[in-house]
Amino acid sequence: MRRPLFRAPLLLCSALLLSTACESMKPRAVSPSDGTTATEPPDASVPTQASVPDAGAPTPEETTATPSPWQRARVGDRVEYAFSAHRGRPGSDTGVGVAGHVALEVVAVQAPWAWLTVTFTDDQGRPLLHPRLSQPRVLPMRLELTQPWKEEHRGQRSTEQTTAAGRAWDARRFLDDRRPSDGPLQNRLYATEPGPLYLTHGLLDASTTLSGFGASGSQQLTLVSFRQGTDGAGTVPMLDHAWGPGTWYDVRQDLSGTASVRRVCLGAQGGFLLRKEATSPTGDAPCADFQDAETTPLEEAVLDAVSEAVSQPQQWPPVTAGTAPSRRETFTVAQHPIPAVVFEAPAGEGAERRVQVTHYAAEPWGTALQGLADEARFTPLSDAVFRAPPKGKRVAEDSTALAGWGRWVKDGGQ
Image 1: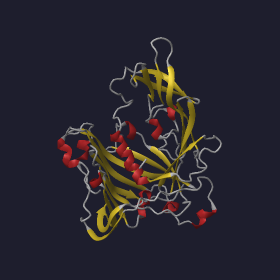
Image 2: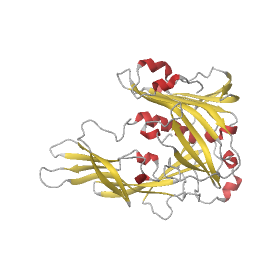
Image 3: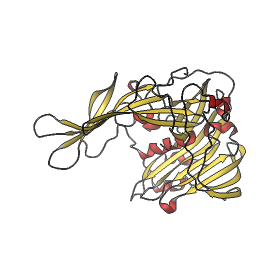
Image 4: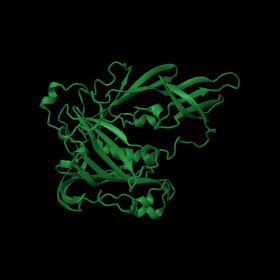
């Protein structure tokens, strides 16, 4: 999972099928010459991956780590961005797109956690119809840093002064152009001092333009407003609709007769989202250690969510060409009975017939999936290939299935 300043009539292009008339409204990267007062040498280093030694009680090292602005988080702290994303279709002038606003807000502070909501809406503040963006998500963010992280950015650096959300900012731009090697163009603009924008490390503007290998499209975030909150604890929200941090889930794989279980643990700390996979998990301490976790800045995770919304099927459940009509049944994961939609399709080649059977949750935001991270809600509950002889029962060959999930950060903090 990797996971700028003007936009007006993008709502006109938020329908799923976009025409060439929307070309002028697609996000565009801003040249570093716009407002630039100084240019620094390029930095080709790879962004540092932060590692978190412990997700539980504070360690002695934490007391000497650089203080995080999250330790001053207050209920009501809020940032809002306009977003848009577009994906072209090869050989076509049309594509898919979505646009609107996303707000991140602190709704409760209960040490060592701040609890955020992340809400995507259209330009008028109404819920979006896109299944992946239709519901607010809850995100518990640990306030303390377990080590002094330094966020790194690739590419050409320049400094400038700009205006965003009604305020003048000293800013630094990072322009990473990988188009000569069939990569994307990434443009990031950050306030030199994050101040009230600490939730997103001071992000003022971010855009990515795809390039190469037939890729066509872009995604963009633009700061439109911010607000500073007041003292108070707030009310800790339930983790029923978790973005991911604070939860875990297990995936069982049966490949060529060999079974294994993979656990995905998700956390968040000091403005970074953490993801770690483990094999042979136990239920006693599902996420006790985030050492060597994959780490994504919160603002990049928001941009990834926008990108995924147009990179994946626009309807739910997804329908693949060539599949037989679906049927409904109940799929049980641990003690969770889940209403499911089942699709079957021919699989593989050769004389022996094979069938791929895929289960999707009928309602990805339904109560049957309370507490499940959203990345697992929009993948198959089960995906299996069966050998189907002319006579007799099907024989299972390979399969992957959701095997369980839970919360390691309990409601009310832990």
